[in-house]
Picture 1 (cartoon, rainbow, N blue to C red):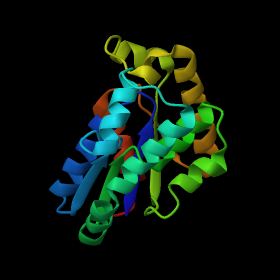
Picture 2 (picture 1 turned 60 degrees about the vertical axis):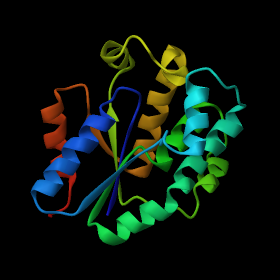
Picture 3 (picture 1 turned 90 degrees about the horizontal axis):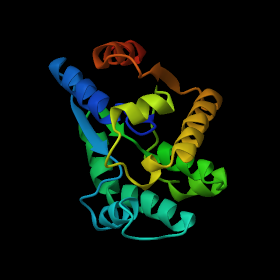
Length: 190
């Protein structure tokens, strides 16, 4: 099973991914995690430079790079899927779709960038208001995180896509343990 944990910036994706992995391992369920963008790869390093403002690309190029970053890890993803009961993604191809749509790009074109990657079985959207995102991290924000108008567009797009595609939506503005408990309730019997 592949579980994708999605959401806007500072929604708690990294925290909830780690908490879920710990809980599943405590239950003796083989679990692997991935985080995208993965800044440890050559493409990931270019993405990092872009997000920090040290590189400039047209929107199409950055979305191609974000997809390529997942393709760089395809063998590791497939290996993890074959060896583990659960693979948890801290962002996966869904975020490229949402951010690209917020950038005014064609959804079909964006989805084709990731066609062939293992599909997620469940998508959990950690939903927080824009103000909460900024309260959680006010300094050191990347290129996407700094633009309040764009961040609101991303949050609105996440909510719209989540409803259309029947993703699970969790109110992530609450304490992390409450959010974690809600995520556990969404999982099938394990």
